[in-house]
Image 1 (cartoon, rainbow, N blue to C red):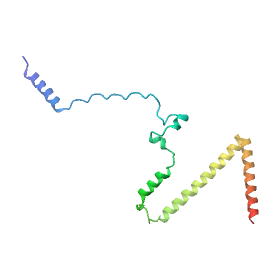
Image 2 (image 1 turned 120 degrees about the vertical axis):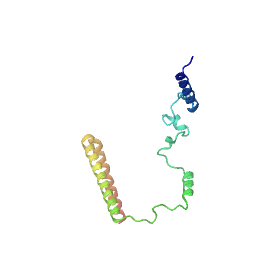
Image 3 (image 1 turned 180 degrees about the horizontal axis):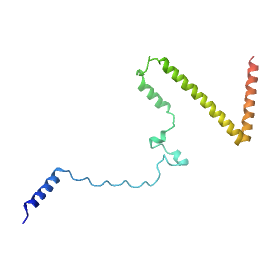
Length: 146
């Protein structure tokens, strides 16, 4: 016959199965894709189809219709920072950051010109000739106006 200990174990297992919900069946894997998504597709057929994924919208300008809708939705809303003034310290920080950014841009352009001068002398000479011609044309237009 069954011992008292065995009955207790059986009872404990039975009560656990009543308390704990059954485990969910394993999820089925989605079927493999037959073709790549349009966001990944290349070639003229990719451009012919309308965009299907939000990633297809990156870098695109809104249509006039959607701009009008956005504008209508924003009518009457007051910006959170309307009427606020920047402190003198903040204005100083913004001015300094802008100056540094412009300086860095000029330095990058100078470095690019130097690289071109050393590595691509033909293109560099062409660029200089274009700049000179442009400067002459601008000067001539200025003289004509006087």
